[in-house]
Image (cartoon, rainbow, N blue to C red):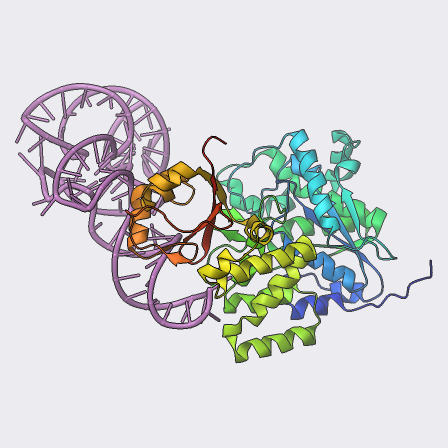
Length: 436
RNA sequence: GGGGAGAUACUCAAGCGGCCAACGAGGACAGACUGUAAAUCUGUUGGUGUAUUCCUUCGCAGGUUCGAAUCCUGCUCUCCCCA
């Protein structure tokens, strides 16, 4: 293999224009500009998939690597056993080991899709359980605990916030464990910097402090701001559901739609963070977008870029196709003319249910869209009726006018009906012959 | 241990014997306008229903009354003050 010539870029500067710097320790920028360095971010294995809330952190690592540095993703096999009190008002329940290990392996696989594991600045995934499992308690409180005072730990916001309601020793120790991670990676992997969300500042700084006191070493911290949405709702969620990276949990279609639906106010912020495009390219896209926001150029560009990275080209294509059929100027006849394969691909990501043909032919629309379809579309007949009367329901792109009529639309491909609640909620109903 | 206040639909919050399926606000959903955006306006927001009908709901269990979310008794939980 030929020695690679690494093109180094100023990482801090890169994050700055992307609006991704919340807090930064003095000297960080200069330290990184001296040459190849490593930085790490910790991921909590609380679920078996990352969601787009975590993606800010993932992108921070990606940008770090693109600047010529070595990113390390730490999955918290050890810390996940404890629970980070930051930003939590209650003591957390502990995860059981089997679940934890399963989650770890899933997250690891997902991280591998983003980072480049080849070259001299190859990314690395580490698990802090590897160095904690052999570390006994007495050694730990001597080697790590001796260097940090309780006074120092108590002064952290994450701890102070919990003093009134209570905080177990376990969670109180969390920052020390995380601090030790930093020390370990600093010592063994040349990790000079720990990155994280703004709520991690306190924990990260405990690490730099430990490195300074224990080894007279120098380490740095940089945190990213919490991503907000203009309407005040939480980023990365629709209703109460997270948008996951795992296609089994959130379909590529839904994933794509999340970005497409970003408001003008938010999308500018998002594209800076989630796109790998260069500064000039992004700025010209933004200018272009402002000329004609209705085209939603930014939303489309961003949605395509992210969906492709997460769900591959194939996943993106299906999501785009589904979107254009569901939201484009598709008329009923276009829908009918789709072949079954396309139909199935398009509807892969939308909720589906089955009903028997006899039920279809003998039920009024309101009942059909509630009880008969297993309350997937409407919870009750009354709700269905009200929505139909309010003009919010379509079947096969044709507005339903009366709740009492029997559904008599042509079936797509002889077996499907496309029900639509409002503008954005689609449901596929598969009609099966009785007895099957 | 003593004293006080409270528990109402997704959330906050009225109601304090019939006019209560329960004011109002937020949220959510839908319609109009748009660009699958935002803002705005309108409607819906326990179930059934063509319905001013009926059924189930106001912490839990009983009771008083022709009639209770509203009064009484017990229980459970929460908060505050004093020790």
